[in-house]
Length: 420
Image (cartoon, rainbow, N blue to C red; front, side):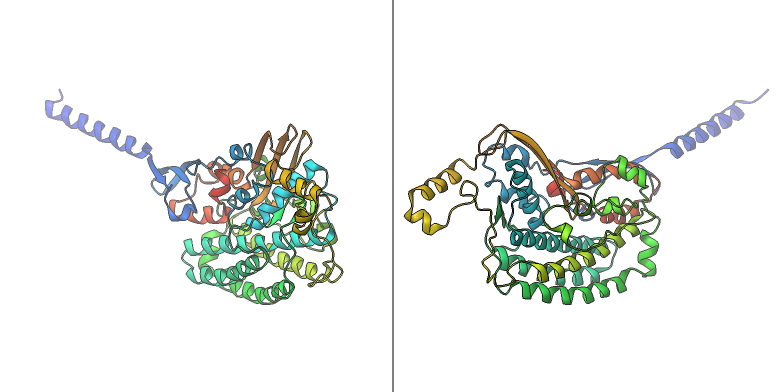
């Protein structure tokens, strides 16, 4: 017969085994963000951990409470242009171009833009692409401990800010594009400054690649990490470098060309594995291709730097573009046009359109539903960062906590447009 002591020992052993089994199945929930420096904005990710391994990840967005889409319903199409600066605030010039092209498609004048205006817009968009990728690369590298890369990338980015200031008068929130054209023509010295930047940028980019591309520590941290298959990238609606890094050759500048992109020669870099390393390499090559586009635009732009042939930069339509100030002060019809444009906005036809623009983060799309008049009935923004973040629950499980910084850096998102 077992003694009371034997029974107590067996019960204790069973309880200990049960507790150990329960402990093994126990998961820890960890909040990463919304005020974490590696989330690049107010993003909260709820991580479920089994030790150091992530078993589940849920992105929690919406902390900025922007409300841009609702704001657009209460102002004219032109008044909304400054709000587009604040979407992807690393590439305001590109945001301006995307929004203006959407409204011009609604107006039916997207194919009437003067050639000089088209080239100026393309140059602005490509400068914005380089600027956004430089910051994304610098922040990505700094999160991983490579502070020197951050300093070098910001040195080149400062030159782009100087170019933005010279053409628009502002460094960050440019509001340069107008419906039907641009705010003003470029200064005579601007093309020379742009050429100088391109000549200096490529050697600087080579230095950045020397620091990272074959760096053993960098490669070990990012290669074969968070692989996004080609099918997953398509299924989740990814766009931009995150899509092309998975091997999908899709770029709106090539597949659905707009402005003067069909007249320019450039390549679309794609990855083969779809890991963090591929996404890094795609962005590096995209910056080279953008510099290549800029050099072609400098040579081909109608009118040249000084515009001696007086090429227009706006459509010739007084009901869309503000008339010259001299005519406003001397003629009644131009005065009326300016008054109507400023107070009520341009008279857009009823209908609905969608236009997608190849932004640095991916496809920035604007859906406009118009019932006529100068104010949109409904405006929807397809923010690439919002869509790209949807892949997080798919790629995080199986990675380690220390990998989250690298994965987020490779996705390169901006919460300003995510929480639009």
